[in-house]
Image 1: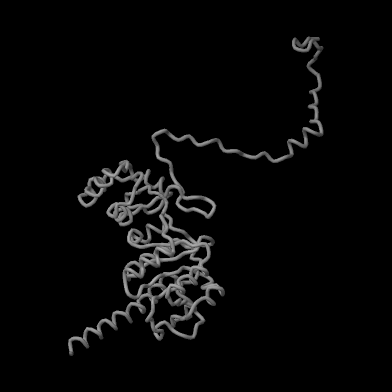
Image 2: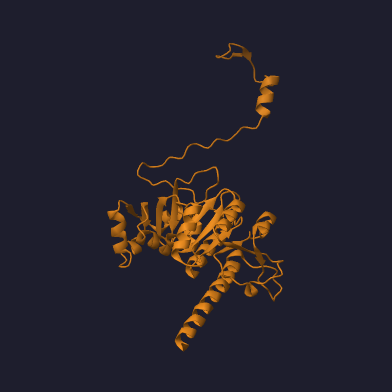
Amino acid sequence: MAYNRKSDRRSSGSERPRLKRSPQPQQRQRSAQPQRHIAPPKRVAADEPQTVSLETTDDQPDEAELIYGRHAVEAAIASDRTLNRLWINSKLRYDARFHPLLNDAKANGTVIDEVDHRRLSQITQGANHQGIVAQVASYDYIDLAVLIEQAKAKVQRPVILAADSITDPHNLGAIIRTAEAMGAQGLVIPQRRAAGITATVAKVAAGALEHFAVARVVNLGRALETLKAAGFWIYGTATEASQTVHTTEFTMPTVLVIGAEDKGLSLSIQHTCDVLMSIPLQGHTPSLNASVATGMALYEIYRQEWGKRHNLSSLQKEK
């Protein structure tokens, strides 16, 4: 017989194994509850720039925004837009075309960091950055009243776009790029259930945002009524409309309303429009991409204006 030193109890080689005590009912209930996993806080070096979100929601203010891509960043620097920080790879850092622009940005207080491709991809969350990324203040939307005043001051028959619940930032960026290239004076977008001006929009717009005004309104319908009161005619694009875009005459200050990618114009916006028009299609595809429809409608609007200018100049030459 031997004694166990810890318990001073007798033990033998044939001693039966002790049975484990079952947990108390309260303990069993606790162990059955799922345990929440709380991730530890991520450590960031003091000198490491924080990655900011590319997309924002209505209840999340976009205090800082990223723009990336050569055309977008080049246009932002050339237009004297305030840049908080700029990340660039070594190839572009000493590129003869970018060197003067970078000097201007640095003179305006921009912090310039030369980083590798991996860091740029990390900052942009894998987007096509083309070797350069800039951090800017959130986009400065213009008031609708100011947009109307500026549009009327620029041309005799201004053209303003309105986007009804365009949620795809790529579509919105393409619409802005096309509208600015064709000569339109601005864009009106709603605050809710629609894409705002984000890094993706700026990238797709390829610098057009630096020369194009965007107004963001609480209610798009009321904004269209305000434009009506200011002398604009509201033209909406609708697949089921019997009147086609090439048979519509654009003689007044124009607002072109483009519908959402999947549902088109909402009924309330359709009722606000003075004219509904469609783009006739010959193939089996039932509808067009929103940005493509915008380009086709804008081209017809300006084609008519160019035609009138040509006819007027021809008459003047004959006299």
